[in-house]
Figure 1: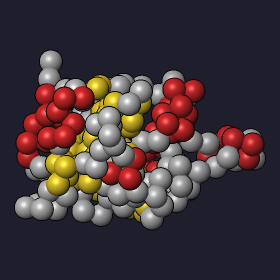
Figure 2: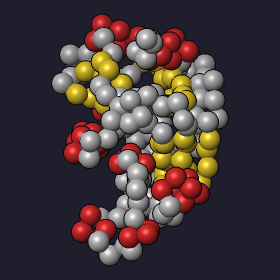
Figure 3: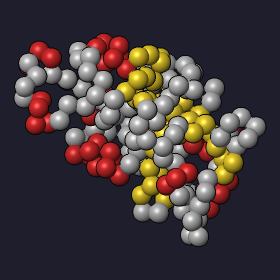
Figure 4: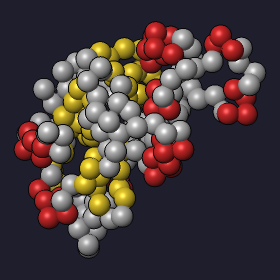
Length: 184
């Protein structure tokens, strides 16, 4: 089992809040966009942790043990009844016939074109869980055997470039730190 992080932007977090989506997390989409990077290295049995930066802290938003990896369209048809793997703007939603409207949580609708969906039934609730600032420098990410710490600014805050644009594999020690946030 490997652990991965994927970055959720402030804009995405705002939309989750606006739609009152607190989970439980059941899917992470992957694609070719910086805002929704590829999840092609994630396997069944791995765990994905969406993270964000808020108030100068690294926050872990949720935990998703991956039970299934499939084409995003297949996931959408099965779980939402709609095979569109790209977002439909709110102003156009009224033109979709009632029978085809997506009836799901906000996080179940991809925000850009999606290729893959990693899903599971044991995802956590979506809420901020802060990583203590004093251990940020100990967290390591990257290919197995080549893990490296996040790039930090002069105040010890992770640089956005260390988090966004790709799904990052975490070291086993880092995975333990993240898992402890979800104990109890």
